[in-house]
Amino acid sequence: MTLTLDEKLRLAADEIAVSSSGRVAFKEPLAPFTSFRVGGPAGVLVEPRDEKDLEVAGSVVSRRGLDVLILGRGTNVLIGDDGFAGVVIRMGKGFEWIRGAGADGVEAGGGANLPQVSNWARRRSLTGMEFTVAIPATVGGGVAMNAGAHGSSLSDVLESARICYLAEGRTVEISAQDLQMTYRETAIGPGSLVCSAKFRLAPGEQDHIAARMDRYRLHRSDTQPAEAPNAGSTFRNPPGQSAGALIEAAGLKGHRIGGAEVSPKHANFLFARPGASAQDVFDLMAFVQDAVERQHGVLLLPEVRIIGLFDNADGLKTRP
Ligand SMILES: Cc1cc2nc3c(=O)[nH]c(=O)nc-3n(C[C@H](O)[C@H](O)[C@H](O)COP(=O)(O)OP(=O)(O)OC[C@H]3O[C@@H](n4cnc5c(N)ncnc54)[C@H](O)[C@@H]3O)c2cc1C
Image 1 (spheres, protein in one colour):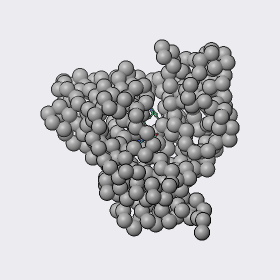
Image 2: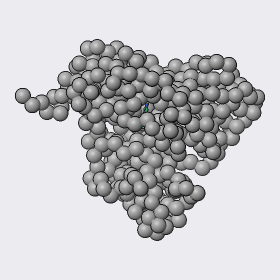
Image 3: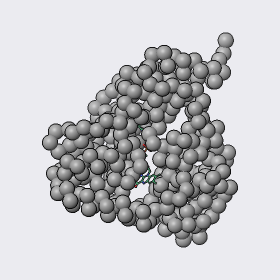
Image 4: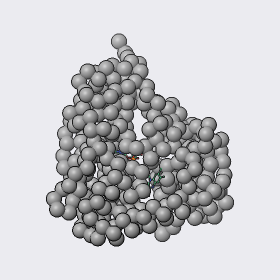
């Protein structure tokens, strides 16, 4: 007897729930777990409490041949209106710890909040993580994306990460060098999960560290809009250029499609206004990309990860 995808997902949910201590839900809406606040449900949502729960989820997913998505704080994803037809592993409780690593280091779980790690380091007079003070990410999502700001990125301070290969049920410590971290990219692919990360910092003056963090926060509140759901910078900066400046020069500030809008304050921020669908945001991204390419001859590639199905999927180029 051939099972439908929903039947397979239901069985997978039951199987994971029986052997795992974390929360497991069937068809849970994902929009509340993303900063855009749009998108459909997860086939199955799993919130593992420990590495054993991860092993359980990984083995069920690989045995049943299901797709898997790892979700941090959802601040860099656009999930389609039909959701994700597989198993979503959301890093939360159980992976939120932060502790010291040697005299000048900090280690944190993949679900820990990056600004909290930054503040942890400040309290111990350790410098190096100040630039992450307002990046609203998990440690795992930050490492996977090589998040950065103010001229620094996590590759500058990451020493190593424990990576769980879900299909193989294997967790391995990998050096930052082997993760091949470049601008908003790493070798961490789907199915590889950052369980924890170790950062190498340096002793510093607590007042200077705090002052730098204040400056970064202030810069952000001065330059970045926050009045509607968004995912930060939508497009990557092309080498030597600013995506926001190119979009602004194309006259697109304030441009709307359905409930999606190019921020009138910072053109690389797209808003999902009340009533917006994920498709509206996708269509606006495709429109912006096309307009900038036609007017400036520059292809803007999305920084936001596109997940699930969209109409006119070929209308947005995600690779050069
Ligand atoms: C207001 C705002 C400001 C922002 N400012 C910045 C900024 O200054 N600099 C910057 O770089 N980004 C910024 N971002 C974008 C975003 O915070 C980063 O890209 C961040 O790294 C995403 O982390 P996350 O936990 O939300 O990951 P998600 O959005 O949940 O996931 C992003 C990607 O990482 C993968 N992933 C998530 N967790 C894990 C894990 N544990 N293991 C393996 N893969 C994982 C996901 O599968 C997905 O492919 C901003 C976003 C917002 C909303």
